[in-house]
Length: 279
Image 1 (cartoon, rainbow, N blue to C red):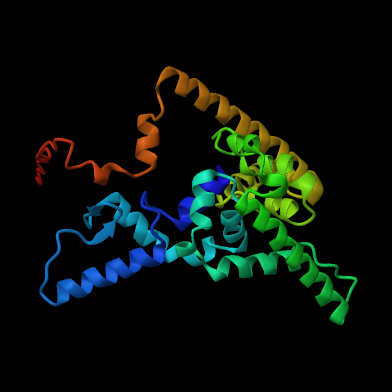
Image 2 (cartoon, one colour):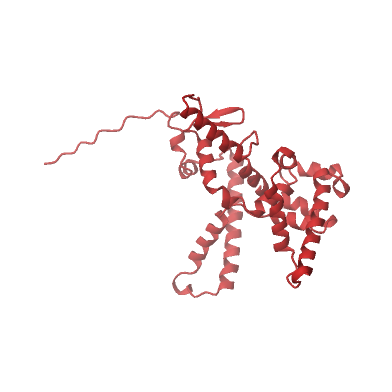
């Protein structure tokens, strides 16, 4: 799910430690090593420790590089408005309170719901009123009060088959003016560029040869249709593989480049001698 992916981006580890805490752990470990106190692991994550050659540690390093552009305003807001019980409990915990999450809410409300026909003080008053109304509705959501006090809707929220934006469409939009609409917008976003890369690949396949001058609108419609067909076909293939018990193939394993993490588990055969006869 998109929201769960986003929450995983904010908290990569089972202990739900923030990325900032993990980085501070790394700094403290490095300072210990410099002072002569050797540690058994490089990064303290959750209840265990991770070696420097571990996959999780590599993910942490990659995440540190890409953290700023990936944690955009939509991610911050989706993290706050996720109905998934685990994410909701983590976001409402005072220890995990991040002012940047609420600053992102203000920016998005001004951007999405702002009335651009109003200028000056009237425009500011309109935006501030929307932000105030959002916080009032969000308070009821996180405290499960008012229209959110029914136990049935939270039972549905704990169902992994229910997507976050579909939950908000059913249980937030009819009862709120700002919160539900914003929640649907931010929790339905795809986190990543995979779909954009696939669509661009389809565009290049369409606009070639004598069709290179195809209009923008026509290409957009053809790309949407072709992309939907490919996504549906891939979903059917995954369902068939899951039913057969084949979650991953050798091709998938090789494409993920995970070989170097399994060298210690796989018996390596000595390389064959290559005889070079230079005559």
